[in-house]
Each structure stands twice: as C-alpha cells, then as structure tokens.
Length: 317
Image (tube, rainbow, N blue to C red; front, side, top):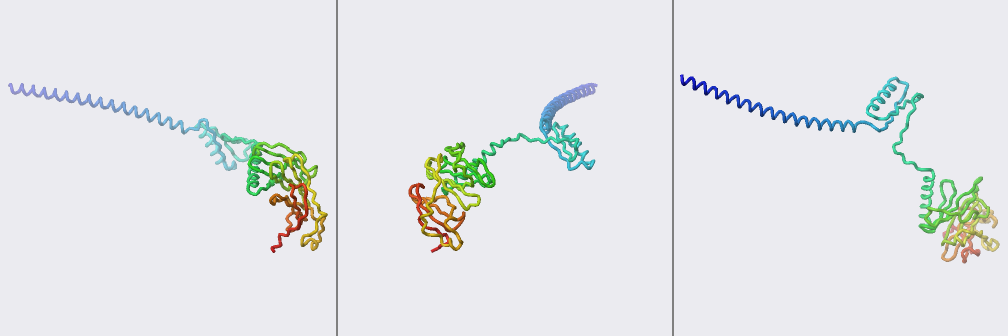
C-alpha cells in the first residue's frame, strides 16, 4: 500500500515538474517570438521607408519630357503616344507629345536652363578673336591682318596693348570708305582717331603699319589693284599725308617693261613700305603681285623719296 502511495506521489511530482518545464519553455518561446516579431516589424518599416524614397526618386515630379511619334498616319502610333503620355504624367512628368502633321497637337519645346548669348556678345567675341590674330601677326611679322569675312576691316597691333584698325563706314560697288580707329587697352575699347583718313577717297584697305605710337604708314588700293596710295602719319593717325613719288627722276626701267608695252604711267601700284635699317623702301609695280618694278627710298621717315633702282624677283644672278 505504501509503495502504491509513494508511486502516486512521485508520479505527481514528475508530472508537476514536467508541467513547470513545459510552461517555462512556452514562455521563453513566446518571448523569443515577440522579439523576432518586433525586429521584423522594424526591418519592415525601414524597407518601406527605403521603398518610398526610391519611388519618390523614380517619379518625374517637377520634370519635363518631350515625346515624338514618327507619324500620325497609323492608329497604332497615335494610341502608343497617348498611352506613353498618360503613363509619364502618372509619374509626375510634364509631357509634350508631338505627332507630325497633327494640327490639334502643339508641341512644347523645352530648353533646360538655356544660356542666352546676345548678338552684341557674339560680335564682341568675334572681334576679340580677330584682334588676337592681328596681335600675333604684329608680334611675329610686324604686319597687319585683313578680315576674311568680307567686311574689309584692316587691323594692326604695335604691341599687346596699342593697335589701329580701318573700319568701313560706307561701301558701294566694291569701293569702301573708312574711318581710322585706335585702342590702348588691347582692343577692349576703340576710339575714332580720324573720321576720313583718305580725304574722301574710297577703295580697299591695303595695310596699316606703325613703327612707334606716332609714326606709321596706311595704304589704300583700287578694287582692280592696278593702283594704290600710301599715306604717312607722324601723330598716331590724327593726320595723314599722301606720299608722292618723283616718277620723273626714274632713270632705269624694269627688264620687261618695253617688252610688255608698259610706260611709266602704268606704274601706279605702290606696295606698303618696307623698313631697311633706318630707311624705308617702296616697290612700285603695274599691279599687285608683279615680280619686277621700281624702287624708291626714304631716309627721313617718309617725308622725301628718291629713286634708287629697279627690282626683279626673277633675276637669280
């Protein structure tokens, strides 16, 4: 009997122990599950936030887009264009749809932050580039430039700062009329130094060449380039004097003058003077580009000229 009672007691104790262990395990499992649920909820919230940010970034809110379809002759392209416009607008884009030859659709052409450049600025940039080229010519060859855009402007720079240019004020039938301008600040500002440097005569600017800020030569040729005039200045271009050569003192003639049937009256094209030490020489020909002609020299900066012979570029002796 006692053994039976003891067995019952031990069984009860074991059962109680088992129930207690079971309850602890369930409580621990419940606690762990709750922690996992909390962590999962936190991860889910972060993921949702990230997705929202990505979705927001993927939208076209505040952006503009243009859609161009190839033709309106096909219903397919019309429907595709309308559908694409609808979907893009759903994403927040402002859409311009273009269908060729569809008068009911007026396309909006978007320019995203365009940089406006005024015509004056473009002109100033072009002039600055031409001034820069003239400076290089002056620096390397001590010579001038003539604009190649048909404007006829002639430029010369003595140094980086000081320069002159012949600007066209009027033109007719190939004849140009000029004013003489000067700059002392590298071409940023130009002032007119002589309103009519050639005393009312017109033609094509032949050249400008200064040897200091006061003394220089400026040339004007006819459109046919069979005659030209050279002017000398001693005051920076404020006043100019046309050079007159003593043709009646010529005692020697170019080798082919008579062969070609020329007379002294045909020698009217004066090249721009060339510096030869302290002297200056002018070649006189029947037209521009000739390889022979007369030579005149000045020893007093162009005030007086004397005949000194002939030149023949074909003579190799």
